[in-house]
Image 1 (tube, one colour):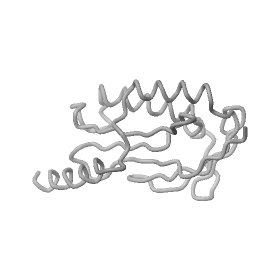
Image 2 (cartoon, one colour):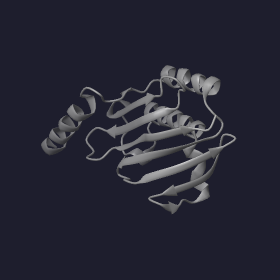
Image 3 (tube, helix red, strand yellow):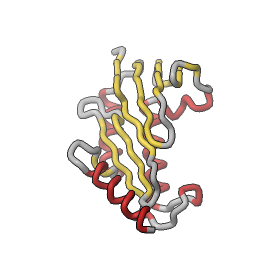
Image 4 (cartoon, helix red, strand yellow):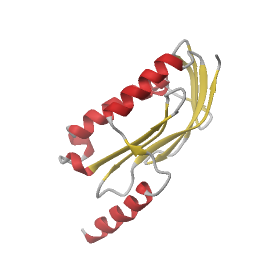
Length: 154
């Protein structure tokens, strides 16, 4: 128990230090989604660096708002996973994370919503999600991703 507490505190210091993403709220998510719908291009490519339990690099190409090509560490990704990696798919993912944090499913291994830390950032101009972090207090590894490159075609 003491080890888990120490690990949780150390991770907390890293997560909440200057430069860490802000706490994810539904209001921030809705505002960012509105910005994306008003200003986001329908064709773009982006590179996403995954961290935590999954560590890989994803290259995504979107046309007409739909993912048309995706690789993970240079290898083609299964088309079934593509829908989560457009900007709209990322918004849907973040919305599901908020729902899961409010009423944690058994797969998260906790029943207390206060044990789930969600943080995110959005592009200030276009609104697309740029960073995400989920940590479950008492666990050693979280889940995170960061858009390290975004190129709009419009």
